[in-house]
Image: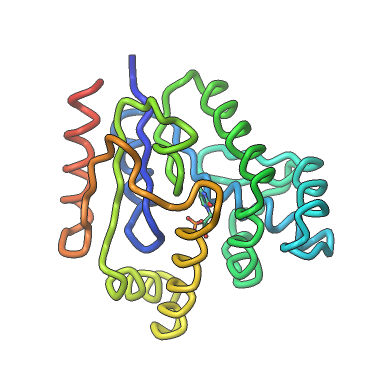
Length: 214
Ligand code: DC
């Protein structure tokens, strides 16, 4: 039985690229749950709702359909893959994803997505090995030193490294201290510090873990 592979960790650790690469290598579907939260956030912004207003946010998120296929993300059938990477969404996503009821709905939808795909997948996020799939066969936690993460993000986006470092620090603090499902190393996860590793080395390390369980 092909496994469920969870890949958690903060941003700038290469989670998305590693996830896609592992999924490709083992012929598994992959789910980017950050994109789910970003899409919910876009729906909230488009509805003109305050991201901190729990009741209003929950009502918006309950009423929209979020889906992902082959790495593309859809809001009510519309391709929002690019739009959800823009600064307004990035700035509001921590507030939206901190509401407990939003997380409950997202967890439910993420589990249903994997079920519909046949029960095996590579799933990346912040709470996948701890909350969404605590019984996953393979759990990985990717980490990197803060300055390395900021540099990678800035290069990826062509943005000012200092502004990126400040934004990362703010989101890290928010994501790790929120009351519900804070970012944490899941029980049983293998921690890989990617700071001084080439991308291929990270993929090799994770592949070895998956191969041992397939
Ligand atoms: O990985 P990303 O930067 O696209 O994630 C966007 C935000 O969504 C991030 O600030 C934290 C949140 N998130 C979350 O709370 N739980 C997840 N499983 C995935 C992302």
